[in-house]
Length: 136
Image 1: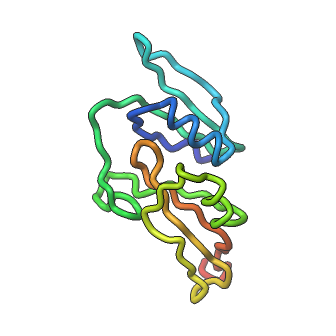
Image 2: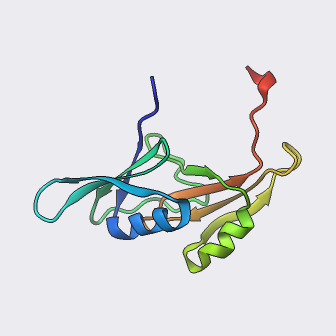
């Protein structure tokens, strides 16, 4: 079995495509017409796919690291080489909700920040995380 994708509800699909393509290297991989001028858009980077659904009038809770209710997506996360450099490069698109924070007490060099995408979804960017191979 392989992981397939994460589906995101979007108030502005075009702004969402722009955000993830400019800052995280995604590319549009498929567009599906669902009637009128509405479409579902898949964007991909390597084996990671996001499915973007057009939704009007919906809001997402504004918790700093993502919604905490059952049945909600808390956040999506990306490993980057340098959290601070990415935030600087993103400029005004880097809407921080928390951090950047260092977690050196757990893993030396682990640093994370949480951002809000154009639809209110929380995106975690992290550097230096490593699995604990003894945990299994």
